[in-house]
Length: 386
Ligand code: NZQ
Ligand code: ZN
Image (tube, rainbow, N blue to C red; front, top):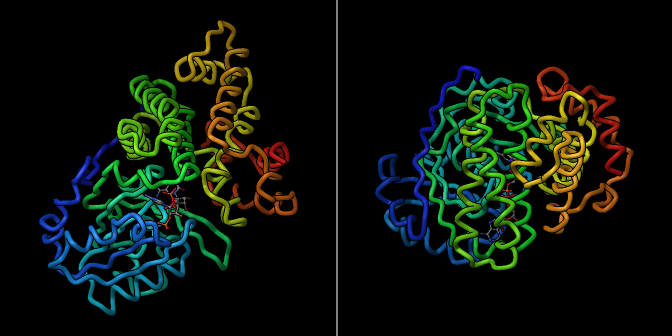
């Protein structure tokens, strides 16, 4: 196993009714809150009113309307608001998009210059306002990690800022808030979770047995409960298992002892930056294709192990088991109604060349990924997804 450090300062409050703790916890940071939320789901579900009732003694400013694939302009708007209103802390009520904007605002508000500077040079992040989270979708793991993915609309770059100052101080994870999630968002969240685990599972170091075994358990959890949660939105067992799976999938636990760059995410981020595609839709299209592309004499053993442990494939021959595993991944994605080609989502090949260059330029794909990929490789993967 590689050396590692493991320190997650986020206080997780998991389960029904945990929002009740917020007032006492947030008081530690002051009285003036910037509440960040999305396009209205929290008003429909009643969570908006619940937050106000729990935080009745606080002064709350609002930044509503955060869009999926959140934009830099939202970050700038929030940072200006924080400075103008002398905000003490940020409360993100929503999913990955809302949380990521809140994290980027938290450091941009303490920085004298354009927020994108911090994305380009993390060493400029010296200070950040505390961010608290009320999670409403199980997907990104942003509630317990230090990353934030933001799109610069002008340059068409979708990049991640990641620094320990961006860990949320507290995250309320109440599975009953997921009951209102439509099946499509439930599926998207499950696919993103599965992909996060796979990105870490398929990395150069394969001696971290314990990490891989934990990863297999998380992947099996997603496969077991995703469809159930879509069919039975108020199934607490399914919602709670998926919620914790998505948090654990990307809180660094499943990467300890391993190391390397991710493979599918950096390719997908370029696609969603250019086409504003739902993150997990891009992952669904790219993941099986990437697996087929990297399957070789070198990788077949590991992919076969994945197939046997995660999908129960019974096949002694490694190559055949690996191929069956890829079919199982495709079958799982299909069962959730996810698309498998770019043409299904209206993407043609006109930007493949540009996007392939961008994927290489903005990631460690060519030097540190499980299988090193150059621009031509990425372009070929795009072509296979047509
Ligand atoms: O905006 P509202 O009206 O709230 O609706 C949202 C949104 O349309 C809806 N939704 C959320 N909770 C709901 C609900 N609808 C009904 N009931 C609820 N309880 O779901 C839609 C999607 O929300 P969003 O926050 O965009 O989803 P997600 O959590 O999947 O976040 C996706 C973003 O996170 C980035 C992605 O690239 C994408 O921009 N990622 C962030 C990561 C991180 N910070 O660690 C890692 C990921 O790999 C990912 O890149
Ligand atoms: Zn993701």
